[in-house]
Length: 102
Image (cartoon, rainbow, N blue to C red; front, side, top):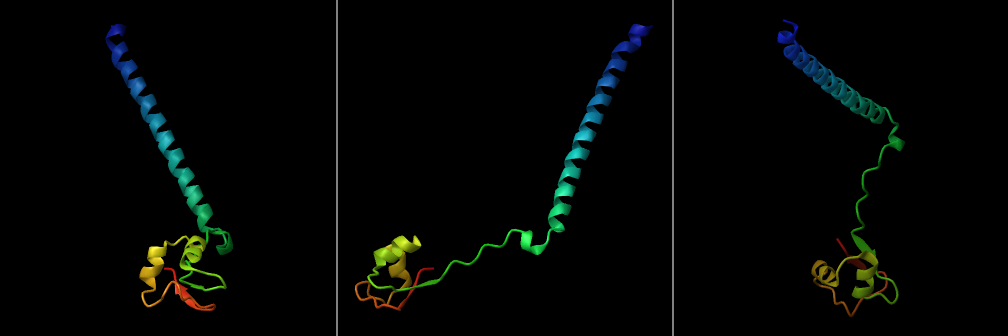
């Protein structure tokens, strides 16, 4: 008679252990995220990650500058500089002139 109930009892014990393990893991995982979110929400503004600053839209031509020099300094291709500055001659740049880069 004991053998008759041994298999179902073993199965029930295994399922109970699996459910309790899953419940503990999920509860622990969600509480870790709740603690992190609460910690971040209570940080002072100066400790939060600052939003990315906008990229400078223009550069000022310096002595000896050319489109290729500006291109290497700003990491914007010469073709893009020519497209953004259609009325500007790349061979006639003047010191103090603004060049659009973005």
